[in-house]
Image (tube, rainbow, N blue to C red; front, side, top):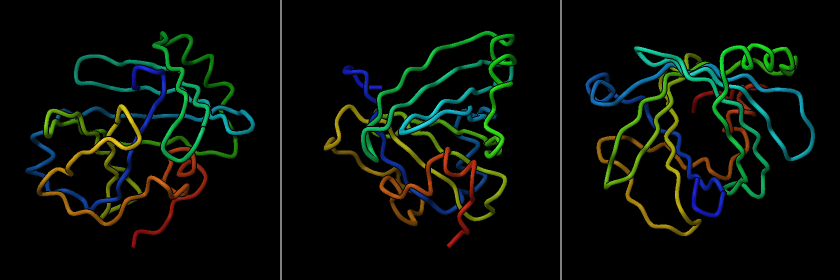
Length: 165
């Protein structure tokens, strides 16, 4: 999140990285469940499992455009997580993924590997401004940018999974 309280992200669909690359990253298993809500707002709870502990978060995002959102995220305890799960949106499936984090050019990148894609993964970077310059990490094969494609938000993936291209 940038200093103004906005989440500004660029997102890319990439070819599945090889195992050697993934081993250089820190990894965590994520399950995120979307809660029932309305309008341009999305609300979710997330369990993020690290090798030695779990972290739980509750997030509300207010979408301003495809790249910019207002994000209100807080760490919660397991009991609050379990209570909020009771508000799960029945139309959406939980999203399960392994998140690999790594640095390139002094920036943190997040690479999500989903069990429903064999040949594709999802790469994102948070920026401090919509026009901020960056270079894509070498060694990863870009399929295309999906920042402006609403089918590739995690909330959309919880409803429908686009076919790999």
